[in-house]
Image: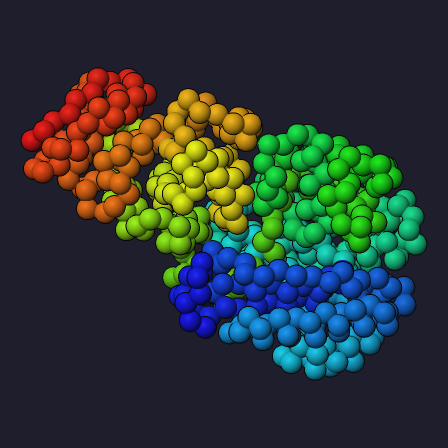
Length: 502
């Protein structure tokens, strides 16, 4: 596929089709990359695993819905000219007696070979998915599907031993005949004597799967959380356990914000809450972290060459936004070096934001230029706060969004969204965000977002002064507005300011 407006053209699109126990899903990614953007995402809640635990077979109506979805997905992939298609099937097709016959029909429907993955490989890919979505994750990943629960240790870029347990939401509801007390007994028996539970003690539990994301959505709405992003949503384990017990006992229809959860998933909420509650009791993790990256993203990560795996996913994602949305993408490289010099001269290189957040903010600093000037800040804030970034936590998202918001809107501007995001930052991180925004306002007034000027308009702290040096023909860039913005930045740094024309 050639260049498409609004898309990067660095590789062919790739589709992952996941035939799961609850849903059959198609996700088309822009390319095979460290931080791939989703071009298209569609699912059918076929419920293949609905009766497998008790009958040993896939239900006829569920198979029919799944096959219809695969036929539809085939047409859509052809329309999008997808370069490569990978199809996997998990627990329901793996466990059912008529699974092989169904997969034969499914291969005809989709026109592709289907990989029936084992429970061990499913756990491994879930672990890789978490590694692909977070910066240095340490703890245990748990992927709750319709038919099974996979538990696997993750440590930086390494995946530990994994297990697959037959207590997915649909399987559990089927085995327990809709009785939550019986379901609890089944889960307790299944969770006995597994090293993965001991491995999560005091670390993070990365919760993967649609049912747990739905629970997190309800928790966000109940707590008034200011950022409606699932990936990276982190809650202390004790708070999650309390909320899970509430969901176990409540009628799903009376839960606050229940309309945010699809009707097909609501019956599974109590069972997902039960499993999560017992995992926390047994494993005693520090916190529960919601992961939107699972088996599909793990499969993509597994396909990457080793050098691409080592790329920082946040910076790659920010580079893509810079390439697609900045007036002149090459300006970001100048801005990164210009800001690094300023920060180093001010003795702030040990800042909690770290170099990667600072660099990412530079890459994202001009993405709002096409909007009306009155709304560039607000629009950029919303885009960055809700972007499909990986490798960044929620405070990091808030930092990036607020930095670019104030770069456009000014230090004194505010909005309800900005006020909410500030709640996620420590005072020190908020201070650094304001400092960077103020520096950006100087840089863009000097350079107009074009490369080649900032290397000749250096800014650095010299003793008690903040000195802007303009050489040669750049003398003419000194203006009342530049002086005003330089004065604001110097005040944040606790210094006097000076413009040196030589």
